[in-house]
Amino acid sequence: MAKHNQAQAYLHSPFQPTLQNDYALWAVGWMSFFWSTGTIMVASLLPTFLTEVLHASHTKLGILEGVAIALMFASKIIAGVLSDVFRTRKPMIVIGSLFTIIVKFLFAAATSYNLVFFAKCVDRLSKGIRSSPTDALIADISTKQSHGTSYGIRQTLYPLGVVFGSLLATGLMVATNNNYRTVFLLATIPGILALLILLYFIRQPKIQHEIPKRTLKWSIKDIKYLSYRFWLLLGVTSILMLARFSEAFLNLQAKSTGWQIAMLPLLFVAYDLVHAAVAYPMGRLADRVNRKSLLLVGLAVLLFANFILISTNTWWGTLVGVMVVGLHMGMTQGLLSAMIADEAPADLRGTAFALYYFCIGGAAMIGNIIAGYLADLYKIQGCFYGGALFTFLAALALICVMCQSESRKSSS
Image 1: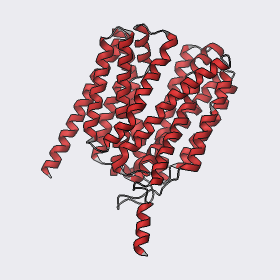
Image 2: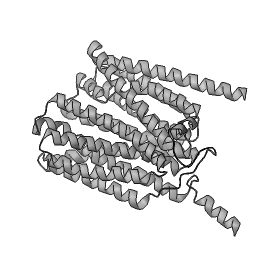
Image 3: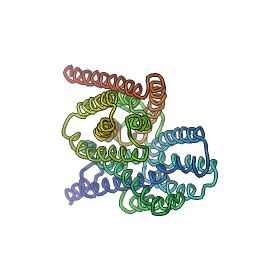
C-alpha cells in the first residue's frame, strides 16, 4: 500500500512528465494564442483609430506607447514577485485576464484621447500582470529536462495568434465597413476563451521549496539564492536586447526598399509564421543539446539577418531579412525563458522572471533610442549596424560564459 501511494505521488508530482501536465502545457499555449489574437485585433487598428477618428497627434501617440510599455514592464516585475510571495501563479493570471477582457469595452466606448490613454495603460498593465506568473507556471508544470519543449509550445502558439488576429481584424474591418468599435468589441471573445481555458483546463501545482535554508515567507534577501549562472545569463540577455529594437525599424526598412504601405502587414505575417514554425522544433531540440550552444547559433542567425538588411536594396531582400529575424526569434525567445527557468529555484521563479523582464525592458528602451539615433545619423541602415554590433558583443559574452563553465567543470 505504501509503495502504491509513493507511485501515485510520483505520477502526480508537478515536476514529473504526466499526461495531465502535457494537457496543461498545451492549454497554456492556447490561452496565449487567444490572448495575442484579441490584443492584436485592437493594437493593429489603434494607431489609425487615434489619428483618423479621434484626431490625436503623432506626438500623443508616441507618449501613449511609451507610457504603456513602461507600465507593462513595471507590472511584470510586481506580478512576478507577488506570485512568489503568495506561492501561487493562477490568481495573478486570472486578474490579468479579466482586465484584458474589460479593457476591450473601454476601447470600443472611447470618444477621446484621454479615455484611450487610460484604456491602453490598463491593457498593458493586464499583460504585465499575467506574463511573469505565466512564465513561472510553465516551469511549475514541466520538468527541467523539458523546459525547452514547454516554452516552445507557447512560443509557437503566441505568434500564430498574432497572425490569426491580424487577418481576423482585416476581415472584420472589410465586413463592417471600417467600424473600429465593432472590431474592438469582438476582440473580447478571444479574451473570454483564454479565461475559460485558464479556469477549467489549467491547475496550479503546489510550488516546492528547493533550498532547505529558505523560510516559508518570501523576502527580498532571497535573491541571493539565485545562482551565479542566472546573473551571467541575465547579463548576456541584456546585451542581446540592445540589438532587438522595435519592429518599426523593419517597417521603415521595408518601405525604403519598395514595399507598398498596404502590403506592410504581410511582411510581419511572414515574420510571425517563421517564428511560430521553428519555435516548437527548436524547443524540443533545446531539451536534447546544450542550450548555450543553441543560443549561440541563434545569435549567429540574428547577425546574419542584420547583414542582409544592411546590404539589401530590394523588396525581396528585405523580406528575406525579416524572415531570418523571425527565425532568430523562434530559435531564442522560448530558449531564453527555458534557461531562466533552469537557473531559478521553483519558489523564486516569479522573482527570476521579474528580474529578467526588468533587465530586458531597460535594455530594449536603450536599444531603441540608440537605433533611432543611428537611423537619423546614417539613414535606416544605421540601426542594423548597431544591431550587428550588439549581437556580436552578446555572442562574445556568451562564449566567455561557456568557456568559464567549461573551466569550472574541468577544475572540479
